[in-house]
Length: 588
Image (tube, rainbow, N blue to C red; front, side):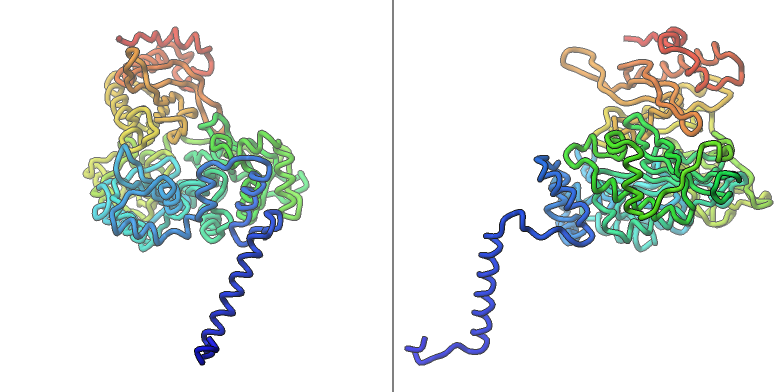
C-alpha cells in the first residue's frame, strides 16, 4: 500500500481493527472447552439448565425439547407471518412451535389450523363472544367447540388466516398465548363464581391473577409438558380441579388448629386422569392471596426436574411418583424461603354438596330475583349464528356475561325472574335448549377423528348417535354421565364418567378394522373420585348405542332402590357380575 503512495483511511483502520478483534474472539471461542461455556441466563435459563443437566447425564432430549432449544417459539413470529403470506402449512417443528400461540395444524384430518383460546375462569363478555363469531365467519369454520377446560376452539383456519385469527382474538381482549404445547393451559375456576348461593369463595380474581402471571412470566413458558391448574370455590357445579396438576380447593378452616380460621385454599397435586390418577391432597393450605406465588414455585420445581427425555413420563405426576410428595414440597419450600402451612383433615369443614344438574336449566343466584340459565349444546358444538343469538340473550336479559363450564356448555347469568321465560324462548328459537334428558345432561365428547389425528373414533358423531338411540328407549330418572374420548390423551376424561368410552380399532378380519370403543364404568370425581374400571373391550362404534341402552336397562332393572345412582350401582358389583347383568349380545 505504501508503495502505491496511499495510507489507510480512518474508516478502513476501524474496520480492520474490528475484523481482527472478531477473528481473535472466534478463535478463543473455538478453543474454549465445553465445560467453560457460560451458564444460561435470562428468563429461559431454567429450561436450558434442565436440558443441559439431562445431556450431561447422558440423556437424549426428545424432539420437542430440541426444537425449543434451537429456537424459542416466541422468537419465531416473523416466520409464522411469512407462512401465512404464502398460505404454507408448517413443518413438524413449527407445528409444535405455533402451538405456543394456540395454533394446532391438524392434518391429515383437516388441512387447517385449530385455534384454542385462553379464557380465565371460563368467563367472557357477550360482545367478546359475538366478536369471536364474526372472526370465525371471516377466517374459520362457522362454529366453535366448547372444551372440557371451559374454553373455546375455532377450527378450519387456513394457514393464510392464522395470523389474522390470532390478532383478531387479541383485539377482542382475549388471548391464545400458551394455550398449547408445553405450557400452562387455560385456567379453570367455578362457573358460578360470585353468583352461587353456596360458594365459599369467588374464584375469578385468583384465576385471573394466575392467568396474567403466566402471560407475563416467560420462565413459566416451555415446561417439560403441558400443565393444568384449577380453582374451585365450593359452588354447585363441579370444576374438576382434582383432574389438574394443581388444584386449589376453597375450604373453611375451623378454629382450634393453630391457624387463622376462615376460607383458605387446600392444595392438591398430580391430577392427570388420562394416566389414571387424581390430584392428591397434600395436607397443605394456603392463604388465597398467596396462591399465585405458591403455584409459581411449584411450576418452577417441576420445570427444573421434570423429564425431558420421555413425553409419556413428563407430567408432574411422574415427578411426584419418583420423589414422593414430601421431597417435592421440601423443594417448593426452599424456593419460597418459608415453610408451607399444614393442617390435619379434621381442621376443614365439609364441602357443600355438588348438584350434578346445576349446569343445565334455571337456577337461583345468591342475588335476590336473579337466575342463571344453563344452555345445552349438542356435543359441545355451537354455530356462529347461535353464538350471536346467545350473546344477544345475555345482553338483553342477563348481566352480559357468558360463563363456559367444564361440562362443554355455558351459563347466562343475571336473568331476572320476570325475564326467565322470554330468555328461554329466545334460546329455544336458536335451536338450543335449557333442559336436557338424563343422558344429554352429562354427555361429553372430545373432537374425535373428524378433527384430531390421534382419535381412533368419531366421538362427537357417536355420542349424538348414543343419545338419539337411548333417549326414546330408556326412561332414566337421574343423570348418567357418559364420556367419549378418542385416544389415550383422554381430553373428554372418559375415566371419570359413570360410563366412559375410549376409541380403539376393532379387528373384523386379519386385514381390516373398524372404529370402536373400550367401555369403562364407575368413574367419578370430587368426593366420589375414582378411575372407571374396564367393562367391555372392542365394541364396534355402530353397536355402541345398543350396548349403552342394554347397560342402562340393566341398571334400572337391578338397582337396589329407585334412588341408587348408576355410580353406586356400578361400584356395588364386580365387573363379572356387571357383564352378566348387562347381558352383552353385540350383533356380528
